[in-house]
Image (tube, rainbow, N blue to C red; front, side, top):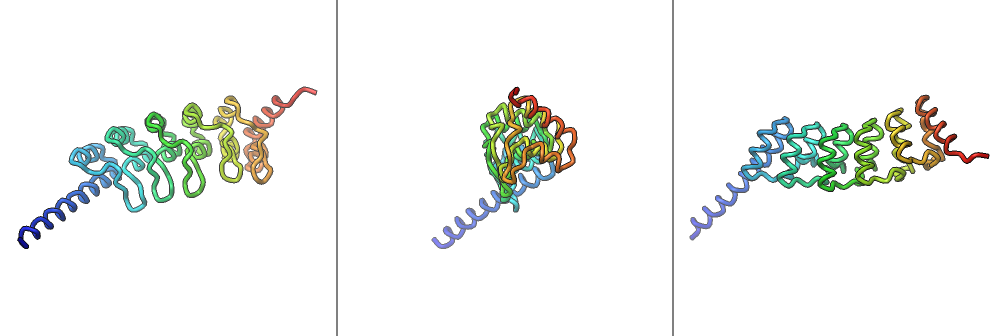
Length: 217
């Protein structure tokens, strides 16, 4: 009886070791950009939302690197499209930061959390606007992100784009109805933020938009 129990315990441990090995293989394949390896590990039963030491899932790794085929394989296997890592970064934030439109579209189609914030209070929209990812900003707006949403310190997407001299994003946001008269918690408008950053063209565009919006006397 003791021998049978011991053998059963060893079998359970062996299965657990196999699971760990499969999950490790999945993570290693994702890190290496090996789509075939990822598909193989998933087919053998690896946990699709396995996480590495910093909390990155394979989908987050693929989203950071713009690996569309790999991201698609993971999503098709049921990956959690809103799973953050230890820093609170989600796949949508990573795709927005990199400007990866196909991955962004894939995540949005599966209802990824639009307004999740990471540990430094940034969202996918903040990353896209600050990095000048105009197409992704458009995708996020189309998905329902509030164009005048206030983020940390009262900043809007327009203010983030203005502060980083991202003129194409600024133009898009203005064309979609962004309010250039809003002020952050320092009392600054997007135009004043652009002026402080030395973004002359953006500051001029914002000044023009405020003039156009001013009521006739």
